[in-house]
Length: 285
Length: 264
Image (cartoon, rainbow over all chains, first blue to last red; front, side, top):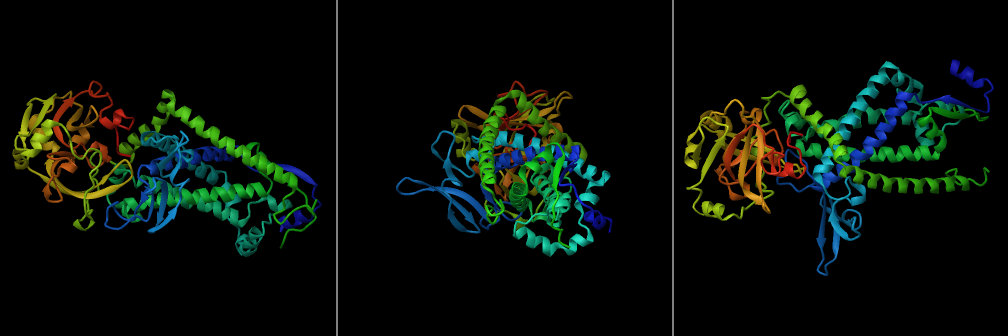
């Protein structure tokens, strides 16, 4: 009720308010760095065995579910082949065969411009991956603790009952690239809240657990726990799929930032301040 | 202004901004890659990165699993149809070839270094010792895994006979295979050496260990990655320090930059 009362008061044309607190801003940028480097070093690690299996081991008698390979045609040309559930796709130039750091075509699953380091080194890729995995995990734990203690979670991320009811409208608004204006832009919309919650409480915990599931020592902490994911190689497949789901999330997240006021969002994630532009149009009921 | 917007609400100014952003993103990406490659060359940064591995090692050991935690064992139904051989699969040394030619009848496993009773054990002697059979998963650092059944003498049995001196900290495995002129070797600490699943295996899937998988004898150290599982083992040396052996990092792959602790 008080929200509605406020909305009826004349609003200043435009004003700044603190949207993101310092801890959230800091942790956001640590995520940006560690997720980027984890993806790139992860693709390096994947390149050592560019194939995904389902089961307790890689050799179960069933073919891989996903595979990046290369072959040389009779005319001597290199062709990159990506196989998904057995269906081959020609992915020359990006997957399987791509231009290496020396400018020549090389056989490599993910191209050198997507991996850390750019030239093949599994040992170095692992070193990078495990360092930033620790950083991401500790940052994530700190974030969850902060979100609970500061009530950021309850205040900003959990959808209200009204918002749950407005989910259909929110989907329609997103499909039409319509973004909340004025006072409504002060809060995350319901789809935004749900996607953040899914990343924080589903995707990130799952990618950490499936990462642990690949460690032989962590396997022994409770023999058999890895079978929850369908076995060690299934866990590796899930780890890979979640990595790309996170990439998809980041792509949509960045797209939304671009189309709903890039500089305003950037400023708010750097200095904390976000500009609300007053609007004559009433927010939809 | 409103009329100039297209369906997505994009003004020409916004388009220009976007072009600027894409270019910025592109060059940031290139800089990131170049920067990471530079950092990757820096020993100081390598040291910083390896704190992650150190954290993993200590937390894996002290927080989540005990020294004697057991690796998962599987049922015969889980066995891989064939057990992949990786790395060296057929040592080329003349001595090894000769030993292989007569079924390793003349081969003896030498145990020396910091032990009270150095000695040499033939394959028949090892087979006569109490054995353990286990179906375990072999996890290669590359990302693949295979499940096989191993029979062998627990390393603890052999060490009980050889009696390590109190100052012995590592068991070094000297192998018959090599990469170029660098012989393969590995090392494990005494905790792993005395672990019940740590075997010197002479049988794979019920058959004599094939040359591809390390005949006549290979190490099984189940809570670590595949490169620790030395094949073609010729000699065990107990040491207090491995910095004088090979490249000084405790193993062939460790000398190439891989971690000595391969539990992660």
